[in-house]
Length: 390
Image (cartoon, rainbow, N blue to C red; front, side, top):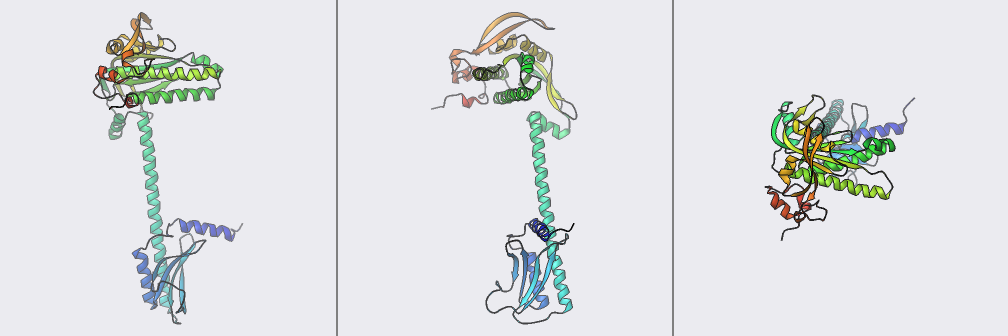
């Protein structure tokens, strides 16, 4: 089946535009070829033209700037600019105001100069392709780095890129937060899978934002469980406070969503949160699928705080209580049995102390809260809750 003339013309125009030559500024190399063609043929004018679907566009013009009006041209010799795919992109032509003939050698010289124009075009196309390839590689590199930053803390990602390994580090104090939806299995049985996963994704995405605002590092999700940690890999003194504020915000988020779901007669989600502060080892495991994680007895205790908690409550360890009792109100639970841990002192975090809160529910800290916390800098996101300074 032969290709129609219109199809060939479409391909020719695509080939021409791939050079990005139309409308480009003057270039010395093209000017010199036109001037050389005129001198070889002893003609006063030489032009390099390109033909698109709308007009003839001139790349360079040696001699008179126009071919219209007096004196009229009486001689024309043009050589087509044929690219490697066989498309005629335009012409290199010489013109004179007097009738003349050129020799075979002069004609061949103009033909060779036309090939030099095509060589310049091919070089231009190669450079454009190189630029596009570099941009694509840069885009891919940025995507890879964004993915790496999403998977790992910035400092850890930088270390991994530098040496393909991350040294495990010991931290004498970090705060681990576990969150889990009570009755998730029952929810899974009553909801469409797409709706269930979409809702879970919405909650976990919101938890990510909350964790980031409070300088907590999101570690992983396991089914309906969410885990993050404060104080690693960037150490700070405020990680128990950060985690308490984040936990309160998470519960506030779920409470607000449940009120909306109740109006729509949708099943509600009950969140349990557990917190503990203690020593951990942090590092990267895996070679193909990297994951930044923490290990140690503190992680196990934090998990027990969550599992021994209650729906809609934030259950914390004695370590959290003693570090933050001047800032938050707690409900003592006494000694509670924890799986494989025996009996542990536990407390329900009720909220920020009334004198240190901006809201009646004890979820939003005020200026006095940060002064009492004694942190060397405001907790990330505090600019959204602090009153403006005079």
